[in-house]
Length: 245
Length: 387
Image 1 (tube, chains in turn cyan, blue):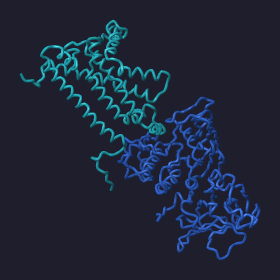
Image 2 (spheres, one colour):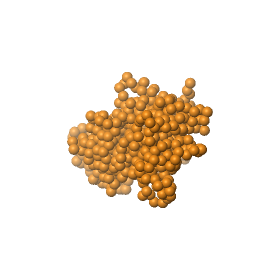
Image 3 (spheres, chains in turn green, brown):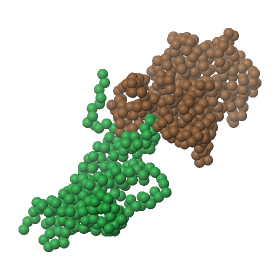
Image 4 (cartoon, chains in turn brown, green):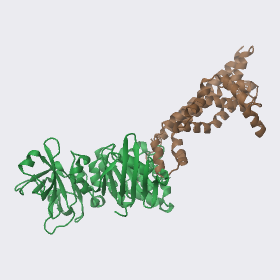
C-alpha cells in the first residue's frame, strides 16, 4: 500500500475551513491590534500595565483555559454570548465563527507585539514635525505613523495568521470538533491520529500545514523587505534617476 | 519696536532648571543666542506648542497661542508656526516633493504652484524633487526642511540650530539661503544658535539667553560690543561687530574699502554695491592698541578711538577693553565699539584707562568672509567661490 499525496474531499474541506477561519480571525482583529499597539506604545494611564497583561495572557495561559473562558463568556447561556444571540441572532459556540474568535484571541498577543515594536521605532519627532506643518493627530497617524509602522503591521499580520491557522486547544474546547463546521486542519489531523489507519491522512495534513506556514513566512519576508526600503527613505533600485533638462 | 510681532512671556520648570523669559521680536531675523543647555530650544518648542509652559503667554500679532490665565493652549497644528529642526526630520517614506507639499494646504489654493516654484528656486531644490530623503546629503536635507516649513505658510519661522549638525562646507552652503528667506518671504524668523558666526551674519536682533533667562537683547553690534556680556558671548571668541558702509573697491589688491564713521577700512574683497551697509565682526584678540598713529606698518586699519571700559577681572595675563571709535569730523552714524584684548603688562605700560585716546589696529587679514554679514550682503552678494 503506497501513501497517496492526493487530498480527499474531507481533507480539502478542513484546509478550506482553516484558511477561512484564520483569514477572518486575522482581518477582524487587525484594526483592534493596531489600536491596542498604539495605546500601549504611545499612552500612559493607570491600568496600562493591566491592559498589557490582559493582551498577553493568551500567550502564557494553557489554550484550554482560554477556550473554556470563551465558552463561559460567549456560549449561548454566557453573559456576552446570550446578548449576541438575543440582539443579533449570532451564535458563536460550536460554529466556525466561534473558531475564528478563538483563533483571533490566541493570535492577538503576537500581532500586538510585532506592531508595538515597530511603532516604538517610529521617531516621535517626525510626528511633531507633521503637526507643526498643520496636520491634526488623525492626519499624522494616517500619513506618518501608519506608513512607518507598516513593516510591523505586516509581520504581526502574518504571525497572527500562522498562529490562527494552527490553533487547537482553545478551538476544540470552545467550538468542539464538528466536521465541516469547526474541524479545522489541526483538529482534522488530531482526529486522524485517533482512528486506526489514519496515518496517511495525518501525514498529508501535516505536510499541508508546513507548506502553508512556510509560504506565509516567505511572502511576509518579501513584502517586509520591500516596505522597509520604502520607509527608510531610499529609492528602490529599479527606479531610474530623474532626468532634468 | 512697538510693532513687535511675537511676544513671549513664559515660565517653565524642567527638573531643577527653570526657563523664565520675556521676549518680543519684530520682522527680520531674531537670534536666540547662548550656550548649549541655556534653554533656547525649550523656548522655541514652547512657541511651537511642542512643550507646554507652566504659565505665561505667547502671542503672534493679535493671535494668542497660549495664555495660562485664560486657559488657552492651541495645539501645534493650529499655531501656524513653521519649525526647522536640527535633524531636518524629513518624512522618509515620501519623496522630496511630497515632503515639500505636506503642509501646503495652509496656503490659499491659488498660490500653491507659484509658491512651490519660488521655494524650489530659492533653495535650489529642482534636481532633488523626485528623490527620497535617505539619499540626500545633510545640507540638502536641511534645505528641503526649510522649504517644507516655508510652504506651510507660517506666520513665524522657528529655526532650531539648523546648521549645528553640518560641517563647515555645508554650513556655508546654506547660510546664504537663510539670509535671503526672511526678506523674500516676508516671514519673521526666530533663529536659535550657539555659533557666534551664524548669529553675527544672520540676525537683526540678538537675544542673549543664559540659564533660561534673557541676559540681554538688542541690535547685534550693541550686544557684541558689551564687555560685561563677553563671558556669555564667548570669552575666546569675544569680538565686537562693526557696521561700516562700502566705499569702493580696490581690485588690484583684492580688497574692498569700507567707511566707518569717516575712517577707511580695508577687508578682503566682497562683492557688494557701494553705499551698502555691511556687518563685520572683529575679534578682540585681533585688535592691538597704539598710543600714536603708527607709521610704516603693515596694518591697514587704524582707527582713532577712546578707551571706554576696561575689564581687568580676567584671570591670567589678559585684559579686555572696549574702545569707542572717534568719528571723523563731518561723519555721522551709529556709535561703533571695538573690543581689544591686550596683556596686563601692556595695560600698565601704556597706562590705559577709560577716557584715554588711542588707536585701534586691526589687520585686514584677520577679517575673513565668515565674519561678514548683514542685509546688503545677504541679498546682493555674489557668493565668491572659496578657493
